[in-house]
Amino acid sequence: MKVCKISILFAMAFTGSMVSAQNPVIRNMYTADPSARVFNDTLYVYPSHDRDNAKWWDMEDWHVFSTTDMKKFEDHGKAFSLTDIPWAKKFAWAPDCAYRNGKYYFYYPTDQDNIGVAVGNRPYGPFKDPLGKPLLSRKSEGVVANRDFIDPNVFIDDDGQAYLFAGQLEVNAVKLNKDMISYKGKVNIIKGTDHFFEAIWVHKYNGKYYMSYAGKKDDKSADSILYAMADNVLGPYTYKGEILPPVNSGTNHHSIVQYKGKWYLFYHTADLALQNIPAGSEDRKYIQWRRSVCVDELHYNSDGTIQMVQPTVGK
Ligand code: FUB
Image 1 (cartoon, rainbow, N blue to C red):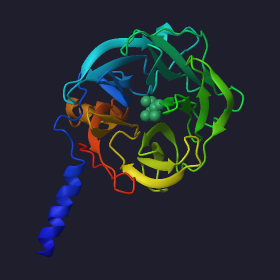
Image 2 (image 1 turned 180 degrees about the horizontal axis):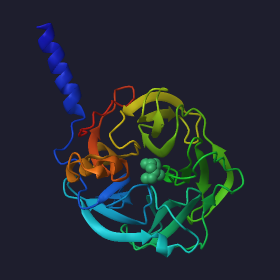
Image 3 (image 1 turned 30 degrees about the vertical axis):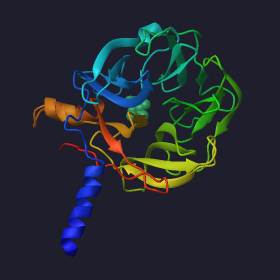
Image 4 (image 1 turned 60 degrees about the vertical axis):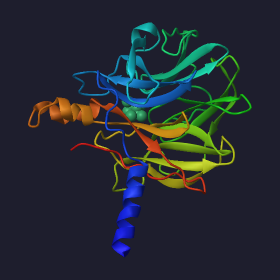
């Protein structure tokens, strides 16, 4: 009887975060760093676009994807590219997008140094650079960037105030002005995000703020998705633990979104590359740069903490 109860509990815990059978959900190209956003009842994914033959993170452009059933993800094509940004040279990495005043604001890092913003009339672009310079960079007053200055995340609170978060090793945060292309006040350095490395994502659930991010939970581990909670968006946060264990792509980068009454964790793995590249091929050593977007359901405990997600990761 005891064994039976334990196995039922185990099965419930596992199926609670069980994958849709289709992971990776984006298969027409390599994609990573998915920022999922809901605009007008459609879920949009803003990922990085890993090149087909990539041997590093030398990405050049961004595509936007959308779904209404969490199964079929439509590629809306190239929305923005390094060639659209005169001041940027390289590395079209993890973006994010926000909606305000009838416009869509696309935030992106370049050169491991800068956070730019581009504006479009539709969620899938095309986007245009309104500033001709970065919105924020490692040289901006108050920014702490001892490693890369990357991975923008925008959070709009219930009172309408928008915040831009960015950074590696330190979480930098500014308040955006209503125009969404400028900021006000000082750069805040967020406290309490233990083990933080990169990939900031802020969301709110039942009045609490959640900051989730990639980081090593101890010296021996690879990057997990970890999280911290706070009563105020700018912290201080209290570290809570792991949401997603390390996956097979080395980097781990995610987003959390509510859609049609369910919560989802988007992340990436190297599974599509493992399926595409035959075992024994030299190219197998490059799978960490040919990533693919996955999604699983996410569940909260009654005290607001987040249950671990068990990803389906290939070998
Ligand atoms: O995709 C390039 C970089 O790898 C991202 O900016 C990081 O978050 C990591 O996923």
